[in-house]
Length: 304
Length: 252
Image (cartoon, rainbow over all chains, first blue to last red; front, side, top):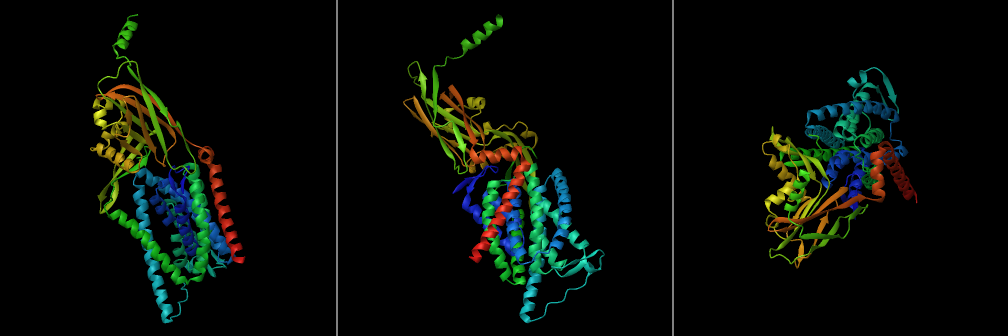
């Protein structure tokens, strides 16, 4: 069944969009990532104009995350204190990111920088997670007990705060910094930032994996809501018809994803996410290296 | 007085309109609804004349053009091993949709001079005055635009798609793709003999979003904040609703 999208001004298959939403929803429920880094490129492939894909993606991710976070609240796997601290950093970062984005735009080549950002971050994070979880899986097989958390530089900073749900007593400076840097990247790359947030919470802040997912989703809701409003009021690129189709699939997928996620081991969950992050990274890197079949591309208006 | 005389002479120097187009459209309005899947417009008509049919065969050219906009065309080039957008050309105005249907090969039914004057063939329908100053090979950018849009079904030339019966009745169909933009689609019909335009007629096909599509589009432009908040509210409602439904399903 074809459906004409009022803002995107294209006609696409409704079931295809439902399926895409469902797929991304499963991911967001399982891993606590919004799925923007997969959804946005997929929407380009379907033929949605990039500006509309980015803006509507934010709206859809917000819905899927909201649905998933409710499931996490019921299991008490959301660290509200940590989420709030991260969010404060995130909003500061998003504001900074928008400024950086506009500066890059004035220099031209913003597309290339966004793609390079994706390749570098996805590559580094995916690689790190992949090898770390591989080691963890091997250790559990051999029966080596997991190491106790080390007291590194993170624990020596002032302004300590107790994060009950995570079982942490650390300074608020590292989470604030993590939130800010993720906010900057999220604004530049047009995603919620979960795929950077999740590993940062595990490896830098030392939070337990089960709490990480819910807390990340909690933070993503606010960042994507902010982004959606920004796009709707400045670029008029939020397509509600597209969003509704994606989120109907998405919210159902998120529920399934959450229950799959709770049944799996933390290391397995992490290695799956790592493989996916690396796959997207590889695809983007290939696009930069392989000779494109069409050297020319069309853009609207006079914005050269 | 002298001017009037000159004008009068000028007018009388023009050939008399011996043949005229009488036109019919299967529809002059296209409504874009939520389930719009493209449309076909049948353009038909007759040639009105008050003298015997000349010996030279008559040809018909139909051109339908969507609203024009400036278009930025970028070209990639290899820099440091990766493909990067390097050159940019802004074409002043290109129609979002353009279709030409004729009774025969376009270069036969219409001379180059007439094509230039009426801007009928696809490359002539695109205005690219400033393009030459932006790149040495500006034509390649125009060619790329035509190639890409043709692949998308937005530009089409259908030679021989217009049927002409007994030099008098003609009919042709124009396919409108599903990815249509709103606006006034200028429709021109030319009658030609030996490549010269002997008569022409212009009309407009109105393409509009209707119903829910219209309402959402207007709201998003006129009250973007309300639209944005509505989008968020729908997102939250859907998220909460699905979560609750899933919970109920599991219990039940």
